[in-house]
Amino acid sequence: MSTLDGRTALVTGAGRGLGRGIALALAAAGARVVLLSRTASEIDSAAEEIRAAGGSALAVTCDVLDLPRFEAVLDGVGEVDVLVNNAGTNDPMPFTEVTPATYDKIFDLNVRSTYFLTQAVVARMIAAGRGGSVITVSSQMGHVGAANRSVYCAAKHAVEGMIKALAVELGPHGIRVNAVAPGYVETPLTAPYFADEDFRADTLRRIPLGRLGLVREVAAAVVYLADPAAGFVTGASLVIDGGYTAQ
Image 1: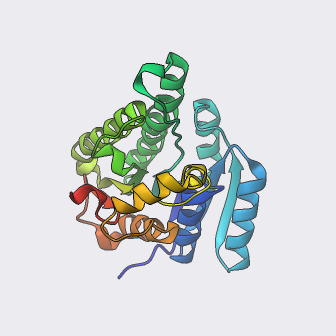
Image 2 (image 1 turned 180 degrees about the horizontal axis):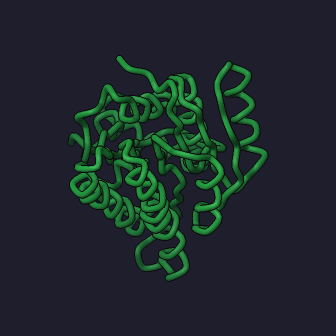
Image 3 (image 1 turned 45 degrees about the vertical axis):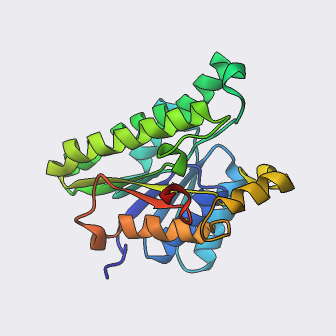
């Protein structure tokens, strides 16, 4: 198995939850990790944890919806070998209560930022002629539907389609494009939902493995897709959901 020694990985939404776990795992695999988030204190803490373990990390405060700022970040960090689009959001509510503002918020962060951040990084990968790996954190909801998640499901289905199209278009440049699609993992984003005992019990009933996923399990899948050992994997969505979507 290869490692990520000598490669630079940029992770968005890297301050907490899945993003932080992914950043730590990529660093442990040998990558120099650039951590992006709007919250400086969170990415500073994660970067310090990486450095304390002997890894290399750079924390950069950046709103992924601010494309000129992101371009400036790329100018400063140099060539990026691995891009992890992790920044995202959800706001569950009945379909009849969704407002344009809610729709725009979910699509802007989950779809628009993924599209244009990937465009910016890929343009540089093509110019460098070195290939690369783009990994987007999708969701099991990009493969199924669920009540009160009409916008989120639509956004994640859009991301899944984007990944397939980009894999076809960018393959000749040696750029692999994949997704990981986590199921229910307890993170700061999902913890409020699991505080509802009825919701938690109903969720566990629907997962054949009978438990929630772990951040490290999702992070391990990202490391695999980033690694040259996965050099023949592109256009794939690795579903990590305990069997939820197998039913």
